[in-house]
Length: 140
Image (cartoon, rainbow, N blue to C red; front, side):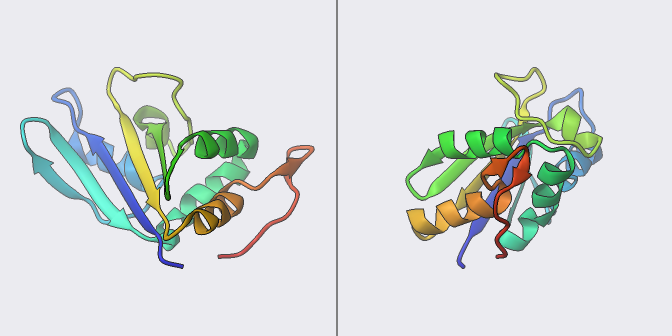
């Protein structure tokens, strides 16, 4: 499966770069680079293996239905785009903010070769549930 995961987050002047790194790596464990083209940001690229922590957290926090809804509404072509709260991620939890956050969010994009592969990733990350438990767990 050829999957590319891009993650990025702006680093505001009131934030410490190391704390933003921690927030990102608590959710998606990738090597991060720093760039500053007017607004500093951390960014990294990975693959499906880098989503294993997110996969686990969605189950631990029992938010599969919410996550599935976010992923399905974030589909554009062969890509899923969504954001997560930096502050909540810093403490190792998952939160999908309803709107713009004052300190910005962690932006995540998942690229797949085709729509079928993209749906398989969603089914792996956040499967349909019965009484809050995965109806079927698939392996990737």
